[in-house]
Amino acid sequence: MKRSMFLGSILLVCLAGLATQAFADLTSLRGAAPVAGDEPPPPELQRVINDKENIDRTFKEQPPLVPHDNEKYTISLTDNKCLECHMKQPGKDEAKSVEMGESHFMDRDGNKLDHPSSRRYFCNQCHVPQIDAPPLVGNDFKSVAAK
Ligand code: HEC
Ligand code: HEC
Image (cartoon, rainbow, N blue to C red; front, side, top):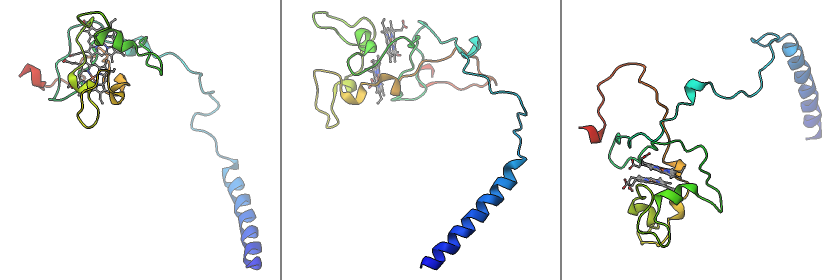
C-alpha cells in the first residue's frame, strides 16, 4: 500500500513536470491584446420596448411579456415595485394598471390567498421585457391573439 502511494506520487510529479513543459509555449489566440474591462452594452441593445401596447401572447398560458422598461423596478425581500402598479393597494378600488391574474393569489394546493403567492413573488422569473428589434429574417408567424 505504502509502496504504491510512493510510486503514485512519483508519477504525479512527472506528469506535473510534463504539463508545465507542454503549456510553457502556449500563447492566447488574442495575442498580447489585453481583455477590455466591463463596458455598458451598446445603445442598440438598450432599446427596451417602453409603454407601447401590451404585446400579443405567442401561446396560450404564456406569461405576458412586459411592455415597459423594468430596469428600475426592484424586487427584494422587503420591496416589490411591480406590485405597486399591478396589485390593488389597500383603500383603493383598482390597481394602477392591469392587475395580476387570480393564479398569482393561489398557493400550490389551489387555495385562494389574500396576498400574492410567494411562488409568484419574483415577477421577472416569468415576465420579461422586450427589445424593439425587427426579426432578422422575415416570417409569417402569428401569435395566438392575432389569429
Ligand atoms: C408605474 C407602474 C408600473 C410598474 C411599477 C410596473 N408596471 Fe407593468 N405595466 C404598467 C402599465 C401601465 C401596463 C400596461 C401597458 C402599458 O401602458 O405599458 C403594464 C403592463 C405590464 C404587463 C403586460 C400585461 C399584459 O396583459 O399584457 C406585464 C406582464 C407587466 N406590466 C409586468 C410588470 C413587472 C414584472 C413589473 C416589475 C418589474 C412591472 N410590470 C412594474 C405599469 C407598471
Ligand atoms: C411562475 C411564473 C410567474 C410569476 C413568478 C409571475 N407571473 Fe404574472 N403571469 C404568469 C402567467 C402564466 C400569466 C398568464 C395567465 C394568468 O393570468 O395566470 C400571468 C399574468 C400576469 C398579468 C396579466 C394578467 C391579465 O389578466 O392580463 C400580470 C399583470 C402579471 N402576470 C403580473 C405579475 C407580477 C407583477 C408578478 C410579480 C409579483 C408576476 N406576474 C409573477 C406567470 C407568472
